Length: 415
Image 1: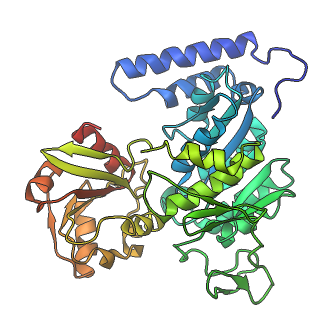
Image 2: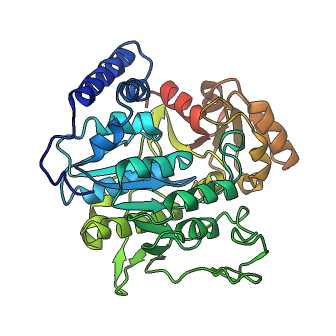
Image 3: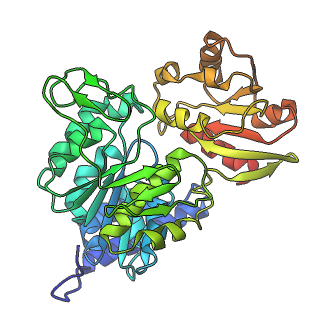
């Protein structure tokens, strides 16, 4: 959204009071050792001024980023790219519901751009509040089934919420659910970013028919719903732009998934006037995202910290870890932020870890142990990361954890 055209200050006395109160509560939360305070601060601010989110975004050109996987990393890459054109405010630590977003934007009074990660369930509502210039839709797959319901329902919420949106939608042409959701919008830029996990997209979201998936293409043989022609594409280690030019991707972040994230980020940056070469060069500066991909020293060993929250995320993570006999620590919790339903463990192909020494920790380590036993893998159940590291054979250790287990790991290893 363009800066306030009339020059009037959208921050009413009530809004300013809400921002001040929110910041004070957040500071008190941090002082008490209860985390960053962004969520509780945002809740207090929105209680005092329910329209605060829209007011805070009024002077910003906003891009929203939503997906099941990769949204935090992509948000970070876009923020780095848009920094070439002006100051950026972003919820870089992943507090992606309205309260956390409000807290983030409250610190962006001098920013030109707002780069905002949004939880999938809240995308339509946040889009109504902040009138974004662009929305990036990366993927949809099963995750937190007890909270988010099934993927077709989420896609329908996106489709209904974004119908007629004035924003430019940058959407993954390889995910049928994303394509169906984005197709209600009049201005869509399609990106061929790939789709490793396909198990949530074998039925047509439009008619329910069986999807045909020859090679990288897909279509429904019953209603004709099919993959759109992309304007941007990931091709090996290059981004192909709409003019056919190939731009090298040089990232410090590992894996094919992050090259796909960089491709979508380059398409978003172009919508804001930042050329692909400039955007991609700036993305190289990103070494880690909220602790993800960091290599830390713990008990005189190197641990690489990797986040994987759902079957699609675990599949991508398995593709980037070092080969056997690299030791692997797996940690799974099922707290509120993770979703309490661990049935998704049975959708993960853990046989890809054959040959790795495996050590299992976390609140739900026994659930995971049963899954690995059925997969005929050898593993050790441990009471802590300390025990797992002590028992692990030499070499860098790959530590893979879901959301709260990842936070537990970071606190324990001092990251």
